[in-house]
Each structure stands twice: as structure tokens, then as C-alpha cells.
Amino acid sequence: MVYLTDKERDALISEPKPLPNNFRDLLRASPKANYNHEEGQLHIQTEAGNRYRIVLRRSLTNVLDFSVILLYFHKATGEWIPIIRYNGKHSEHTNKIEGQRFYDFHIHKITERYQEVGLKPVGYAEVCTKFSDYRGALAQFLRDLNFQEPSSDQMDLFRRF
Image (tube, rainbow, N blue to C red):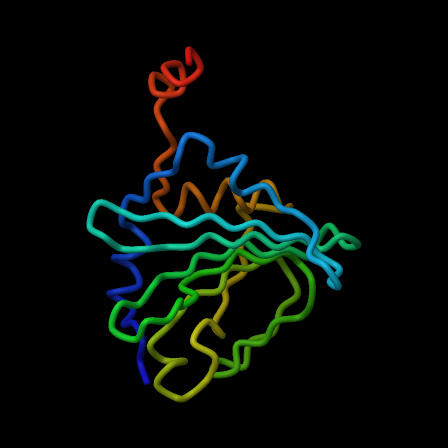
């Protein structure tokens, strides 16, 4: 089953996604009970009516073990589908179709090829040198995926009240 074509994925990635004024507070990660990581989430809806969820995960013991994930609510299936994930250098990754292995910071993307052969839809990943820590990955994620921060005028207006 193909959830998204590569063209659909790219359109979703490039769609402007407005961030609320307090997005940093809303995304603040908190420890998960019975797990060795902390997690934060934020839901976003676009003008076009598309729904997204940002999920942040960060190990409490290994600073290189983190993920910044974008999920899309697929209206036809009623499922949250991971589209893209910015990962730390937490373990070796193998692209199964290509047979390529690496141990580095990397970005996973949902691909038609992996869906068509029944592999994990976000199983394909590419090495990324644009970030080297959790904060850098989040900043790059927000830039690359067209998240729109509130303007400074809006922020000033809200600070007055």
C-alpha cells in the first residue's frame, strides 16, 4: 500500500506551516514514565486544512540519540503517517534497497519505493551534515519543512497583554 507518492510528500513538506506564538513552550520535552527519554509534541493545522504533528524525542542518557519527526494526518486512512524524521547519530542505519550503511546524523523520508516493496515507509535515509545536535536538528527541521514562526510584530503585540 502506498500512503503517499514522492510528489505528494514533497508538496506536504513545502506547504507553509504556521507555528503558534508559544510553540517553544508547547514543544518543550518532558520525561516519559518508564522510558529513558523525554518527548514533546505539537499539533499544527494549515490554511489548506492539512493536519501535522511534530514529535521531539531525546534520550536522557545519550546526547546523540534524538529524533525530530513530522507526521501527517492522512484523511483517507485516518492515520498519522510519519513523513520525515531528523535523527541523531544513535545507531548504524542501513538503506535496505540500496544496501548502503552508515553511522551518522541522518534524515529519513517516506518514499514510494520503500512502500511499494513492503518495507518501512520511512526506511530510507540520507546522511546530513546540516546539524550535529538536538537543537541544530530542530532548527534545521523547522527551516527545511517551511514552518512559519510568528512575526516579531505579533510577538510584541502579545507581550503587551
